[in-house]
Length: 114
Length: 110
Image 1 (cartoon, chains in turn cyan, orange):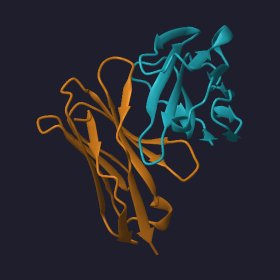
Image 2: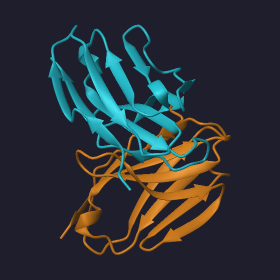
Image 3: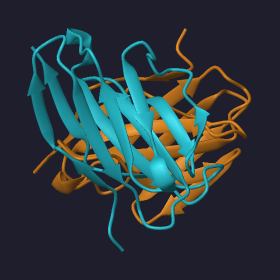
């Protein structure tokens, strides 16, 4: 069974530029999560999708971050414009149906904003 | 006060030692308790998943949950250098959101 795929693995941009991350979850998984993990901290949920609908985006900085999951499969997370404090690892995870289910994480995208 | 508190370490032990990792939490609504292992430059992977209070054992790993004290633990027996990683506790209530601790960095010396 293929795992959660993410790209790119690394990205370096300057502040005020835009960047986009892509995630392909495990086949058949209805729930998709985007987390932000700042160095030395645990992952923080940014947004959670159930199929192509948003379940929770309460911690997503909506003035600069956006995410979509068209057709309930792949997802993209965008930052525009980026700030220095956005430097972090962006993790995508998926689970079968969300409530009480195991989350499987991708390798993450490491973002550095200069 | 953070919802989940975890000592970031680092914790350094010799090979073969018993390792004890702990988290405390403040939200009494948490029902599901998890431990994830995260190797450097990798995503977290689930190690243990428990519901409510009690113990759960899986090979060299034992997870304990004490809801009355709002305290969870992960024990690793006969620790190996390959156990060197960051260990994240995580918990959730009956809903969808999972709250992670900051992670404890563990080093097992050969």
